[in-house]
Every structure is written in structure tokens, then in C-alpha cells.
Length: 343
Picture (tube, rainbow, N blue to C red):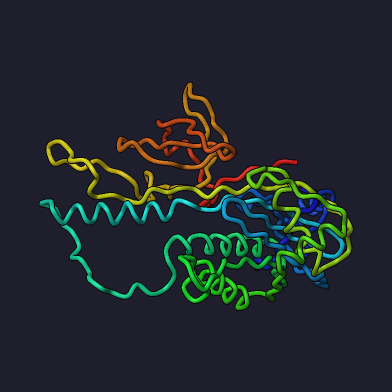
């Protein structure tokens, strides 16, 4: 990264610094290095005489499959983040209802059916999508002194006749209003219409790729950069195109009763968020014992029920081993996503 996030002794974010200055502070003992879920940061060991903060905005380009985030001030672009949205919640809720319905016809514990009850609140799939955006913003706020969230407004298509949702009942509108309210409680909200983003991008002579699933900076982060630059100003073209990719982990919740009957009535362990003392998703450093092979930095997956855990790659999510010893794993931090950084 071109700039290193800095926090004070009380974990409050300060203005980022350059890698060379960060190395000097670490070498002199004035700062301690640490990792914040994939991002290298430093913590000051002294109280600075003066604290000067520029106005920093984060641009948010929401999407159905991919999203872009850019943290920027008038002078510099500090970080670009592209995330994958959680799209599996709706299917999981439907599967849960189906399994619960089937258990009512079996000799198994089940919850009584609740007829004609008002659900209220936000639908689970909608809450997961907008809650994910808020989690990313809260994570960025632990590293940068954010003041403004500049977001491109998304609107549901409304029609007087037909089967399309109207504004009052659209899950999109309900989730968006909840998200905006949460932002206003933490930062200043700046809403930009989609056509305004397009006009500003064209005025700067910047082009956006058409492939929405592309990992290119010019797929989503170009819009998030434009949104942040609309508020802070200072640039006519991106000065930093290094990207951090976040992929939310699909954690399997505990299933006491599966779809198929278990032979002998013995239920197989499935799901849950604990693997031999580690919370699933935890980042660990694996060191080999004996003649084994060291796997380095990875995250914790499931367990085999025999005292071993599975470890997965942070970059690809591929399972590296199913038989790692918990004693060979050093806990680093917990995260509900995996990450990779590309230039």
C-alpha cells in the first residue's frame, strides 16, 4: 500500500503515513506494527503534541454482486476495496423453513407453527446485504478518521400497475432507509444520484468496464473513487489503483436435524462456529510440527471431531488441510471474510 494507517495509543485513527516514515517509527520504538484483518497498520507508543486531520470521505458504489469502496482525502487516495456481496441468505432461510416444516411430520423435536404472525423488521436477505456494507464501513473506520460517506443512491423500480414492488413495500427501499439511518448516526451522509456519478466520470474522461463481475479497478472502484472525489476534490484521475478484495465467509450454522435420517439415530456433527477452540473464520499462523509442512497464514474452517481442524487459503478459499493440530496454530485475529491484495 502507498500509505499505512496509523492509530494512537487508544486505537483512535489518525492520518495515514508513508511506508518510509512508518519504518522509522517502528525502528525507533515509537510505533508498534500490527495487522487489521489483512491491512498493515502501526500504533503509536507516544502521545503526539499536535494532531492534524484532513477531511476524509469514503465513496460507496453499491451493487447486487460486487461493490466498491474508496477512502480518500483531497491530497491522497488511501485504499480501494472491492467486495463480494452475500447472496445466499435467501436460499438458506427457505431451506430452514422447509426442514422445520418436514420435522413436524417426524418423531423429532420441532417448534410449533406460528400462524398469521407479523414478521416486522427487515427481511433476512435484505438485512444481510445492507449489514455487510455497514460492517465494511465500520472496519475502515478503525483505520481511517472517516467523516463523510458519499454513496450512490439506488432506487427500486416502481409502477402503479403490475407486480413490481412499490416504495412502501420494496425490500430495497426498506433496507436502504435502515442503512442510511445507521450511517447518519456515525458519519455525515452524502447521497449522489446515479446520473450524477456518470456525468462526473465522463467529465473527468474516465471509462468504466461493462463487466460487473470484473476484478478490475474500473469495474466498481472507479465509481467509488469518483463519489469520494466529488466530496473531497483534489484530483482529475485516480492516483492509487491498488485494490483490496474482500470475500465474506459462508459459515454453516449448526443443524441438529439433517434432511436424511442418520443410521442408528446418531446425529452427525454439522455446522456451528467453533472448531476445537477456534472461532471459524479466525486467522491463524500455522507452523509445522515434526515432519509436517508449514502452511503459513490461513483461516480456520471446520473440524473432524477427532481433535483436528481444517485450514483454508486466504486468497482463494481453497482447503489446504483437514488434519491440522490446534497446537500448531497461532491465533492472530477473527474475521468473517477472507482477503487478498493486488496492485
